[in-house]
Image: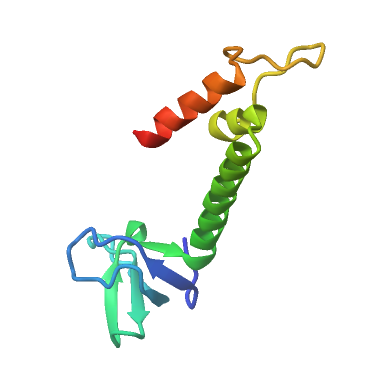
Length: 127
């Protein structure tokens, strides 16, 4: 549950209330009526209005910033792996952490040559 006064971003408009999606707002109250579908009352200063919104329509600004940082970091790692032909880094970023054998050797799904790897990457990028 979000706290009163927290800065939020409107990410969805589930009840089609013409919410300004992508705009900032502040939580000004909770809607404690159990018969109501809304969870919060928010204030959006840009449009100078209050809105009743469910929990799924708003997201904390900090969470959205963290998600954007993670996405940008992953894209930068992919670009670096492709520019340096680092196949292991590419597979690690795209598939997560590879399995490690007891002796410390990494298991790869297929042993590809560098030319085959570049060909597959270019095919996926083209699609």
